[in-house]
Amino acid sequence: MFDLINGGRFQGIEKENSLSHNEVHKKVLEMARTSVDTVKKLNKMVNKLLSSEEEEIHSLGEEVNTLEHKCDELHFAINRILVHSNPDINPFSAIEIHNCIIEIENISDNVEEVADYIIMLTVSKRT
Image 1 (cartoon, one colour):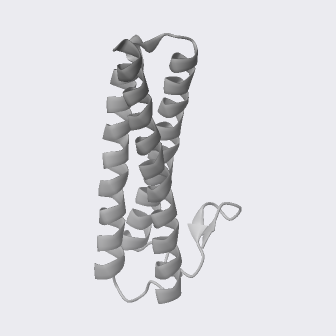
Image 2 (tube, rainbow, N blue to C red; image 1 turned 90 degrees about the vertical axis):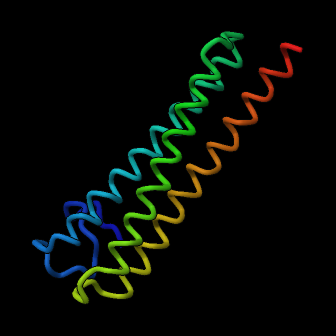
């Protein structure tokens, strides 16, 4: 799977110069960073809710939705590369990469759901 110790390479991928390998690596890292950014936005939303500074909550929620959508697009782009890439990607590595990106996607999906609930809470507090 993903090996942070050895320079962030995927185990089982032998040819580091291959375009598809580098592309998958870059997109997985981008997806992980985007997912982390999504969680950070949610954290800001929770802090705004707790401090009664609710003006920015709706715009933060929109940013969460945008970031989650970006994770969706990266997920599909990575799957496309894995399915259509050269046969030099180890099939077991491809399965592990696929499982990894599903988990990252699940994180972003759950963050989006919580952000939507926070928005509903702020709307219900106003009425």
